[in-house]
Amino acid sequence: MVGQGVLRECLLDPEVERVLTLGRTAPEVSNPKLQNIVQLDMFHYASIEPQLTGLDACFFCLGVSAAGLSEEQYEKLTYTLTLAAAETLSRLNPAMTFVYVSGAGTDSSEKGRMMWARVKGKTENALLRMPFKSAFMFRPGIIQPAHGERSKTRAYRIGYILFRPMFPLLRILFGRQILTTEEIGRAMLNVVLRGAPKKILEISDIAACARPASAAS
Image 1: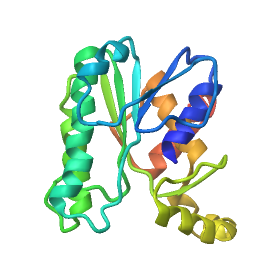
Image 2 (image 1 turned 135 degrees about the vertical axis):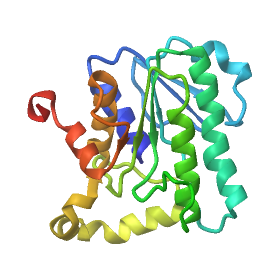
Image 3 (image 1 turned 90 degrees about the vertical axis):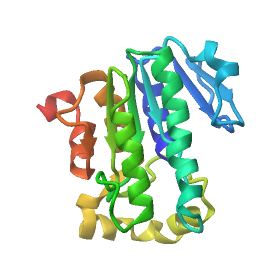
């Protein structure tokens, strides 16, 4: 859903000249400045490297739920997969800004009790050490679809359908913990265009970065 949100913001923004998506499937969107690469093997990129140059930013939104996975399996689909892409992109685009979608509760110490939080923390730490122009770690909490975005995880889709009528109440009760896909997408684009005061962005930081430059100042 976050990927769909930031894609929408990029396509709407006149400062963005070209958008390249890379994934196992192409998005159901058509736009003159959009190009899609369908890549079934997300661990190896040698065959498509010529198409991955000249890029100013990467919004890395791939991720899986840790439910039912061992730590080894989850680390492969989170840490190893992300670093495979990041290492390729940093070599081909040293002036790139890399934005990684992590999650609230991520464990930067890599030593906590929650397996998923340790792995996410390990991934964040590795990305922050890489030779990008800049890198930002986004840690959203509850995500509300703003423009029909749909999760590819079946359990999440069902959950959003069930809780959709309750979002107005949840906004009242837990407003500071909820971000829309539009807010996250706008914030991701804004940190590329104007930077951010910190590298790891929690929920309130993301909300602040989503605001227009005049409001943020």
